[in-house]
Picture 1 (cartoon, rainbow, N blue to C red):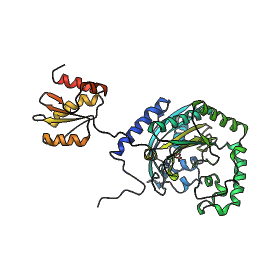
Picture 2 (cartoon, rainbow, N blue to C red):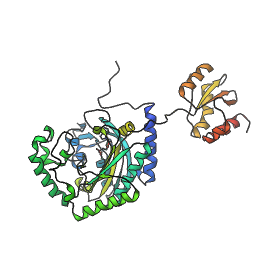
Picture 3 (spheres, protein in one colour):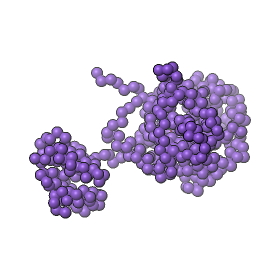
Picture 4 (cartoon, rainbow, N blue to C red):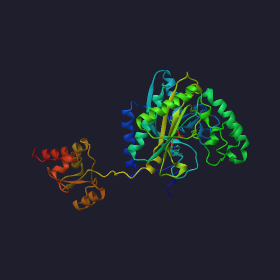
Length: 408
Ligand code: HAM
């Protein structure tokens, strides 16, 4: 019997993987065009990084981390998210100046798996560390919007501001009071959080405190936070980015201050509809033991995005080479090399089978063109039309085929 996959994990193979490849390649070039350089952080870290970064009483840390001792008994955890590790890297390299970095990789959370919620999932994200300016918030939100538009996911953008350490205290005190009076409406898991971490209760879909009784953080913003949020909205308006303020948008991780945002798919079910989330985390550097450093960023879940995106064009080959005797598969590799170098997707039969079998394989592959190689000649059999070849950017191939045929 073949060994099962662990629950909440998946294999992303063809044909689905071609869409992943396209989305990830697009992410690489788009984030680079906004000036974000690649950063690669470890997949496992000391558990303390997430306890201090994400929050000791946060469910992602208390209930969802894959935590284990290493051979010397130190507690390690598979990363449940990328921001804490990126901030640690910034502090390690000196903790000063502007650092704009992008990442892409698997994250791990022990959640109840369902469509779009996995135990291993793939995030792409950016962190812009070192700037307190609202322009940084606006830029990351604009990048997020462009990315989602390019992969073809329709979303609504929700934004909020959680204030900062000066103005949030009074809000939290009033929130705790209201939640303490609403204990009957809270789920079992969250009763203990009323005092410890009341914002997490706002994030829970089972807890149902009376929305009209809940205080709105907007009434508590200090002038600086109010001004920052207004300038973020002005910036988004200036760029024509549409959004709606949601007073309950608190995000699921504890490091946020001021701006928070989520892009919610208009087609996925509500429990998995948030395809991208982020915000500002000006207190994170200090929580990790560093000097203060402001930061803002987001992460997008590729698994969910591709569930919401329309199907892609697929990954059919451009050219399938068919060998007529005495050409061998090894010689076909020589014919394929310049075409592959020109960026074409080229395939052929590796097993030296009959011409008929090779043509069947060519049809199965869905290749746009079939190049029949016999001796020193290559003839483009199907759909050969020089004009189309050039229009589709395959002109180079036509040229090279002609040169090989000695007809240059
Ligand atoms: P997050 O909201 O926890 O934020 O995750 C971001 C995105 O990752 C979600 O919107 C969702 O698309 C995807 N995601 C999260 N959990 C799962 C799961 N179990 N299965 C599938 N997809 C999932 C963060 O992780 C922050 N680090 C984002 C950030 C970066 N904030 C500032 N900078």
